[in-house]
Length: 335
Image (cartoon, rainbow, N blue to C red; front, side):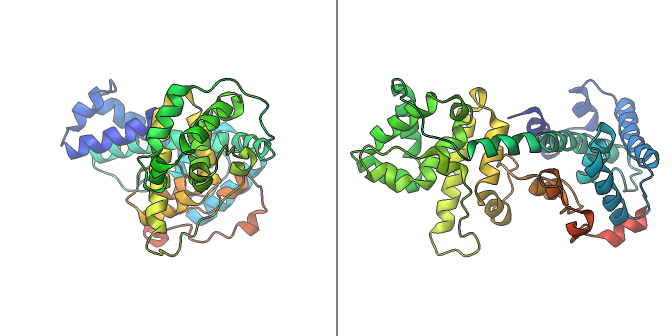
């Protein structure tokens, strides 16, 4: 779990435990006065930068359109701050918060989300290029010995999930798990994103893994997108999708310290639609990987649908600002 996830979870825990604002701030070496000042400076910086770049602030729809035009030309630190602040807005910027504690708690939560969102924006193009380089992944040359301890662990972990449970009766599953581990450990590009690689092979090729002798996956296939039938429940597929997500989450936790978790999450979120299914059908858990678009929807009252330009620039007029605001009229009245 990274520092942003810890902050988000910890704030929620404090609210549930009725921890006072003073006690909460002591954990960060802040006083009420310090925190209130920081919250005011955050808001002031946002509006100062709007003025600096001549961005209209009396209509949120116009503001988003103008910001998109500017950041498309130059994704500098100023515009990135404005963009992420707007995308993670929870009332601090446009709300009329007279209650000091409410303002402070809002700032703590928003600033944590803004840092996480900003990191995702910065890494989007980098991860997209990495993913493109893996899309034509070739067969791995002869690998070394199998790590039998990891083989056993992955085998036991797999059997905890319904769609792989039949593997306990297979004469081939353990052996195929060993071959998977051997090849992944021989390839640095795969080894660093083990949570995604293992979950993708086991989810997409579980029948071959359990039923075919000497099965060795084509790793290029797991870097092609797979879309599951997420709109209709046939009485079984939704349970299977939940199991796929649980497997990835389990692998993610186990390999957290030795993997590039952020890139592994990016692969998981972009190479299947399970994240989309999850956030539409399950109680949200923001540790489940999500796309940048979904992250914006989960962290803000503004429902932005203009984020595709970060990876695939498109003309502003083609972005079609549908559903920019969930409640635009109420917001404009508060400005």
